[in-house]
Length: 231
Image 1 (cartoon, one colour):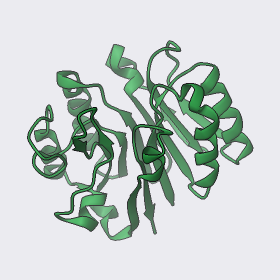
Image 2 (cartoon, rainbow, N blue to C red):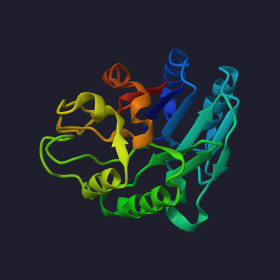
Image 3 (cartoon, one colour):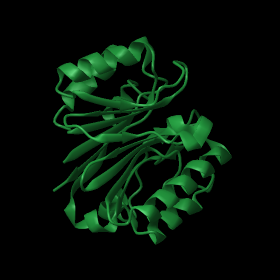
C-alpha cells in the first residue's frame, strides 16, 4: 500500500492545474491525504480529476469554503468517520476504517490550538489498540533540535506521548538522526512538520518513506510531499 500526503497551501488557488499535474505524476499511490484542502471551486476541480485518475472515493469534512481542511482520495472504499464532538476542530481530522486499519488524515491547527487534536488522537490510539493505525498529514509539529534547529514547536512533547503509546515515526525509523525539512519559514528556517506515525505492529512492513521536495522548490506548494509505502 502506498499513501501520499501533501499540504496544498490554502486549497491550491490558481495553482490547482499544477497541483493536478503533480497528483497525476504520483498516481501510483493508493491513497492521497491532502491537507489545506478547501470545499470550493478548486476543490471540485481536484476531485473531478482525481476521480478520472482512478480515485473514485473522496472523504472530507463539510465545512465553509474558506476554511482549510482534509481530503482523502482513495482507489478503494473505506468507512468514513468525522468527529462532531470536536466542534470547531472537526475539520482537522478525517478517519477512514476498514477491517484491519484506521487511517487518520490530519491537518493540525497552529500554536496552542493543536493540543486539542493531540489529546483526541491519544484517546483514539488507546481505544483502538487492536487496529493497525496510521496518523498522517500536516501535524504542524516536530521534535525540538531534531525536526527544527531550535525549540519553537508548541506541544512537541506529544510526539513522545505518541511513542509511549506504541506509535512509530515512520520516516525517523529509517533515518534516525538525519535532518530533512518539509516546510520553510519566510526567514528560511526549516521544519519537518509533515509526518506518518504508524503503530509498532506495522514497523516491520515499512518498505519506503521519503519526502519529495521538488514541488516545494518549484513553489507549487510551500510543503514537500511525503510518501509511505508498506509491504
